[in-house]
Length: 304
Image 1 (spheres, helix red, strand yellow):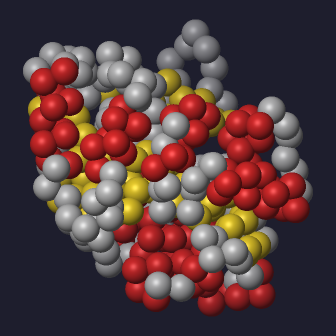
Image 2: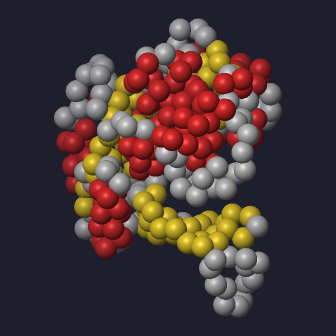
């Protein structure tokens, strides 16, 4: 089974406003409301690609109930811990020429809530996959990723980590199955700017030396690079298409990679599925469907 953890889920309210102007009443041309958070995005795309997962994390209040309801309507199994104080956040994403985001704070997570999460994680079995994605909300220990990895070590749980800087670096000694920084995040770790795939591959291998088994690096319009635990390296150009929605593209890449790997146990196939799933979400109003991913795979074979 695949489990995803989203510490601070949200309702994402995505609105399009023509020529947004501060200080006056603006009216939307288009609006979408859907469950948000990196792990939740992974679970939703996995479901679209035919893979089951269980979404874990913390929710609260009426917004938390709506997140659970909408996930279950999409066929995603949600097993959140209900926090007693506050509400799950609403994130506003405004599209008007450029994208602007206003993210809420989320509920108060108490130590006893964290212990409830650990008890759920204690039920994972050998061969399961655990996706840790996104930031850690205020009030939780900054060591949460490490604490989870420490609790699960030596149990043959395949850890996937999609986070930034120290959150990512601190899990490397636990030999995560997959990490997915983008090229900017990879550069920030080492204090450099990375533009070329040769540079990205070289620095990805440095993370491999620190413990990561497979490193998938997204490069937006420049494509992606995968460095695998068996010493191989794969590169891809970005599939052609108009970017409509950047939200969830990286999470979709993780979901596509996992779905492809579970189907084939082949890293090249997993890489192709990951790149095309990320691009399919970027080219759509919502997250990628299996039909959209398969169409991109057929169109983009020459890119791999």
